[in-house]
Length: 202
Image (cartoon, rainbow, N blue to C red):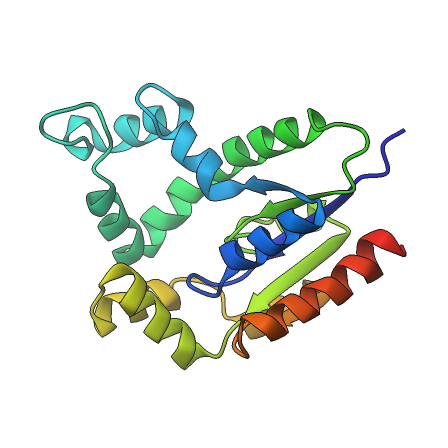
């Protein structure tokens, strides 16, 4: 019987989840990336693509292809809370099903599956995990990273961050907070300790 641990890794946008996931992968974890799966399900005629087209019509596609117009979708989602909730209610169950199917296919000797899920709490998926790790950076660092990474204005970056649940509201459902605002070396040290406590020695 597999003793694989299922760990949910979450945090706000530009908090460094991908960096943390990369470190954990080197320890032996298999990473199940919600964003990657979402992207796959948004390909033409896949389930999330179908949901967007059903809701918004052909105008949600790029003019010269069947690909979704992602900037247009992002603008709708981050400007209109009700639309964001409606789309999430469709997309999250589809992504969840695909993630757990991917985990079920992992080899029995895999020590841990790390589910990288940005909207873990917003989607209601936190209850599906016995282990939840939160990657945290101070708000001013998060804002600066997002602006630099994606070339956003302060206003746009701030609107996207404000649309997500604040880290403080996630703490009651979190088993461990990894401070990713203190440099890569210290982040790795925290992840080494967490790996041993929750996986190796558990």
